[in-house]
Image (cartoon, rainbow, N blue to C red; front, side, top):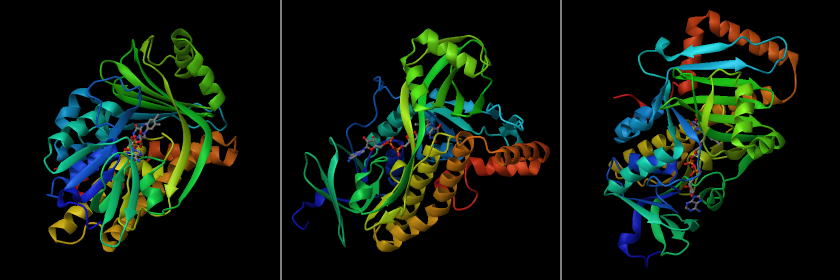
Length: 410
Ligand SMILES: Cc1cc2nc3c(=O)[nH]c(=O)nc-3n(C[C@H](O)[C@H](O)[C@H](O)COP(=O)(O)OP(=O)(O)OC[C@H]3O[C@@H](n4cnc5c(N)ncnc54)[C@H](O)[C@@H]3O)c2cc1C
């Protein structure tokens, strides 16, 4: 370690430049931390990526992007989400009434905005590229990470090792950073596959996001610009395979049936991609000199737009803690910082993981009348009691406690 030149020494090494890794880099760069970020590519410069996911960014994630100075670049590509509808399409008894949540009940801002994932990543990457204290290091992959007492050593596949005080694992579900820090996980799979694409339609979406709860899982329509919707359609793997194999006409027919014709005639459909659904939660969110953010720390099924929103809260939290440590001339990867991050993120990550897993299983795990009755009563109470409805809406957007400062509106 002592042999490495000083220019190879960084305050923070971020492994992975998806939305979470790049947001962490941009947030930490607000203080003069010296940051290096590793990945194969940094944004996509308008090329076709094959990533057909759109991301519903909830209010506090939008505030984060505003505070990072990238929201103005996102806005031309983002569509507001004003109303969220949940429709029980399980056909089970007792029927659960439809529920509709209107953001105007909470104030003036929409619940959030929907944007293509590859667009968001590209905008964050452009911002990182323009930021002097962020080095973007292109490598096929980081091959080795060693957590030592005073520094971590990060070795890219085809380059020289660098040292860093803190390692941020933003390297997705199969995280090398997690394995290198010897952090174990609890993981599970669902017998479900999500199909993601977007499509245009003849009737206006009116900025309503609709979640159909079906016995195979949710089917979610999220408004996009230009009278389009992003689609996340969860099915059994066998049915997903059949839907993916259909030609465009056949797929549109099945989709129109599934959404009961609510968007009129279905027009262009993008390429369809599929994601086998699984769940994962790390048993610790930091160890050695490494912390985990986003998919490296937790993977959830796509219900209620929780995944990346949770990941961005991780990003904003570690940035806040590391920047404060830096201001106080403390080691940003010291044991105190790692323990603080683990403690501050635990309640949010564990409660969201449990809730989303429960909601998903309550749809697919067969008909259990008491559960169905509980859902029916719960939704009825939400409809009848505005303060309860508002509290649930607020908590659905983000936890009310321990929100990092960068996630507040300025
Ligand atoms: C169909 C679908 C719809 C979704 N919709 C929403 C939504 O509406 N709202 C929401 O909040 N969430 C949503 N999610 C979840 C969201 O997509 C994920 O939470 C988010 O993309 C995770 O981002 P990430 O940066 O953690 O990981 P990734 O995007 O997986 O990025 C990880 C990065 O790490 C890099 N990497 C991996 N290993 C290495 C290595 N060894 N060295 C260097 N780099 C490495 C990879 O190349 C990659 O760029 C959805 C998910 C699905 C499947």
